[in-house]
Amino acid sequence: MEITAGQLAAMVQGSVEGNPEAVINNYAKIEEATAGCLTFLANPKYTHYIYQTQASAVLVRRDFVAEHEVTATLIRVDDPYKTLADLLNYVSSQTTPARVGVEQPAHIDDSATVPDDAYIGAFAYVGRGARLGKNVKIFPQVYVGDDVVIGDDTVLYPGVKVYHGCRIGNRCIVHAGTVIGSDGFGHAPKQDGTYEKIAQIGIVVIEDDVEIGANTTIDRATMGATVIRRGVKLDNLIQVAHNVEIGEDTVMAAQVGIAGSTKIGRHNMVGGQVGFAGHITIGNNNGFGAQSGVPNSVGDGKRLIGSPAINAMDFARQVAYMKRLSQMSDDIKQLKKQIAELTNK
Image (tube, rainbow, N blue to C red; front, side, top):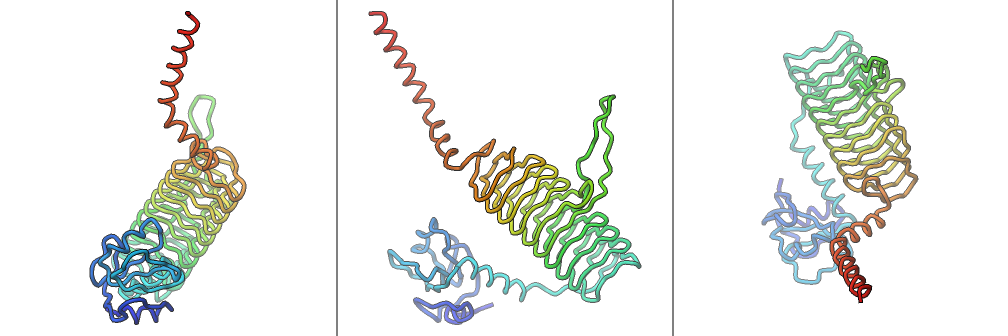
């Protein structure tokens, strides 16, 4: 797809500074872009690249002020990152081939509901009473269990497994290898030291506009439902235990682990490898730094990091003190030596 900077600016309601006839035929990161590429500047940490980039055009904020000469054509918009995201989504929609129909071999139970515009890939399995919405895409080797409900325009990529009774909303994306509705980790200790499995008779409910990364696992509830609310975005390799609830528009990076029955509120941002203890409640609009351990309930609007997680500013001070411990130890030894010398006189 080839377009000029001027044409692109008109598409995104931006303004051109530089050559409106600059030709764009590719996309790249600002530090890697070459002639013909469109890139963007959203993070101030990358500002120095705008004076070095070989890109033909750069999306910048309307109030961006260059401190040096910029050879690329600038396209000024309200939000460069969102504008680029919209453009990439448009390009993807134009270049991704439409998939419709049933590939063979695939198993679809006679009692399942499958619209004519759905896509079922080879070696997929759709169980008894399953109901697929309009324009659902089921890629090869996906398992859809009995009585599963999947909403309109949802995509399950290769190897996804959805156990019986679970429900997935509209416009969801579930990436390869994810398992939805496996048993929660429920085992009762017995007097002889062994464990008795507790039947997990609940389900998983995933609301609209959720995206789940590859090889993530979401356990079914012991009773009731494990719930992923609207707009949640989960990265790869995340473990969500039984009866967990994740609130609207919460985002989680890779390798987060959430123990059973924990409730997480809306608009939380969770870094990689964060661990949440079970049976706690997390409020809204919190941020958790990578590798935080969260043993207790948290209110609203906190910024926490560390294990156990504490206020981010307090954590930064602790780290600063830790870096000085060696010098402080030497200072204390020197003071002790001086005191001993004074005492012996």
